[in-house]
Image (cartoon, rainbow, N blue to C red):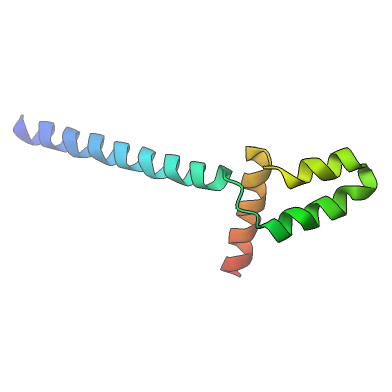
Length: 79
């Protein structure tokens, strides 16, 4: 029975470790890593859609947009 308990403990610790790594990766991908120049460029690009839309681009992006952009950046670096 001691071996079963040891295996169970290892499996539990491994599951906790995997969950922690996924959580850290998710938080990292949701952050807005755009530089000031990128924010200004996004605002200039959005200016034809109206000044309000351009001002929105200067602030932080939504987490969904951040994940989309960060995944694109990772794919570019991988190639």
